[in-house]
Length: 466
Image: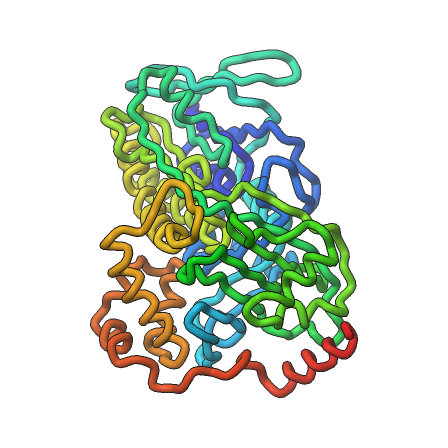
């Protein structure tokens, strides 16, 4: 008997889930309500699509496993993505000081527009599997609280029921999964939102001549001073361009949409390096602003009776403040959990979906902890405030970050957790704890840790912008 799997959503989470399902299903149909672009172009179904996206090493690793016969790293690099070694290729001002740059590259991340990444992944999956995409809007799930049997959908031709042996909801931040589950009789879904009121503002620039090898540069927000957070970054993307993305929390930290005010915002950050880089650069776009930035989590792994043949992944399960660059990696890690359980058990085994949903919650919990533990400190955050445990954890974390500015041992632990190659328990290994308690062996860096050539580039850009 032919076995059909249906995936709701053709974004990153949906296409990776489709790749996993293609190994065990005879037919995989991906449903998306948008007209999908033929090339690396923005689409309206991604509210954060125009802003900075970082594909961490922990997210790239499962992508390397999921698409048959394709190295996603090589595929993305060939499409124009940049590879950034965290240890040597990034200039970052943290609330505790400048990170040093080391000879060891550390974990690597990829940077490009979200449009390029989605287009490249979608193309790789379609070219390497039998997955097909249909334009349709899903109205509801069919079946019962015991088992999902498919979806009811709306197309240009009308409504229809599409039977399925397995359904994955990867429809993103706007998923209606709670409503759909309630219609089946599953009404005990617990949700939580922690919202720091973050606003993102992003503009594209042509990379100035001679600055093509300038490191990824960021000035991080400080959540611990009782003031709204303000941050900015310059990251290289495809097409010899820089993406400049600003972020600020409610109460006065919000970045503007006006181009002149955008530049002033960068120059008023705790260090003006972002503004200095772009003062004389050629803008290639308007300033795009987004406010879809809250941390929101659906605790589906805790539902008393989870229906068979249904899994929820990606932003449909949990969203995170995009400032921490975790969303795509969590989606990829979730798709890998689905893939491993499918290969172990097959498509129709009772209890498979519940096991997957519980396993997917692990990377979600790690990312949630990292994001929320910082966001609760911003003034005006809604849905959370620091408790006693938060204060103890924050005191240790701040000391560790301060140590990491001058200790390779501590810095490598921070990179591993930030890259999602390991969980937060990495910070509690004896070597990391000892380094943290001992403090940084090297003095704090005075100013951005740039090479002589990079300082020359910055001086030249200063003159151009002046």
